[in-house]
Image (cartoon, rainbow, N blue to C red; front, side, top):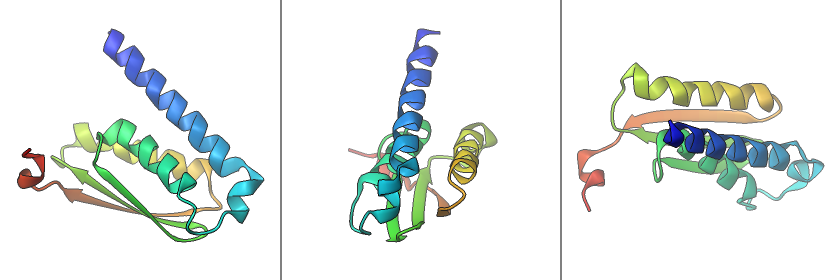
Length: 111
């Protein structure tokens, strides 16, 4: 159970950081090249999907293109990711998110 508690703490911290970054008035004025918001989104989703599985591009000031590589399309694995995506839509309705889910290539998992 301890691992679940530690995992939950990481998610709460990532969520808090993301909320502060995106809710601040500075987020509206950030140049498109500023990676702070995209990095926060990436870290937040990787806390659910796993490290190295998420790519985030900021297409313009309010549009984020997010690609998530998953090892399986099973509902057990994908439902928490989908829940996280919905949470982003609800928390930040003024932003636009395009989510793309793809199967991770087996070759990507080899060292």
